[in-house]
Image 1: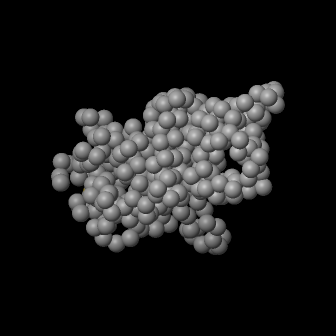
Image 2: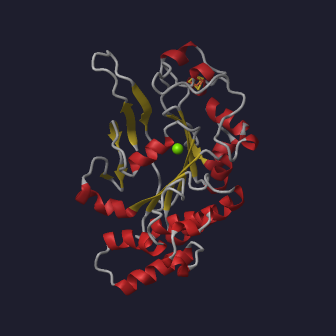
Image 3: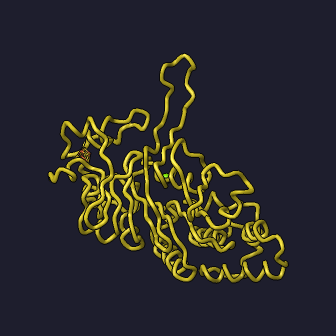
Length: 319
Ligand code: SF4
Ligand code: MG
């Protein structure tokens, strides 16, 4: 993800000097390494889901580039995109909405397989569906049944199975457990971890739940209002958070796990992405802000341990 920008034009009147624009992502760069579980965290509205959708080709960026294994993939049209389409799969937040209610489990799981491997025999397709169902802890005999017959956790495991049908290399999961009962969240997360191990998958895992990050993440990117504040190894981030926003998030862990992340102890509300603060977008809520912060956008700088931090105070050694 290289210099990614995404602005949504909200239309408005043609005589308006400035058309209303939501600046959802503003110059975000990050690299995901093969085999890792890269977690992207931040409050709702920080741009993490938008970033995931752009990576998957479901949205076009306004600026910047997405590369997969060295190939630029943003803006690729259908045929050119197809191989990446197979190698990159997505799991959505809500298993009640993401599975077609009129389609049997068998049909749902067969569809991507037949699309990408049209020469497979019916017997091979059937075997593959059964294998994948078993690998996510589902009963292979569920094929003739419909999504409404299953619990949230079972449905999300069907969604995971659907993503795995075509043997992807890279899976983007956008809040895959946050719509589920707390009692089954760990179980679904464990299925995802086991699957990663067994299939050598790379994950981009979007979440607002820091306990999930700690349990699951190799590295973490922290987003606030469309910018990347900090990017670090998971252990480093929890031991030594540098960015003021990350510090406030981490201090809030015990109080935020299932609700949308709203860190306590932060003054005011997240500003509107239609009217971004000048300089550092965090400046009007940051305890370390000074005059430079409201004038100059902080650039991500690499620390000695490889952590990236975008903050003037960290650069100046304050705080
Ligand atoms: Fe706070 Fe300034 Fe750092 Fe932004 S750049 S996080 S306002 S200290
Ligand atoms: Mg979201």
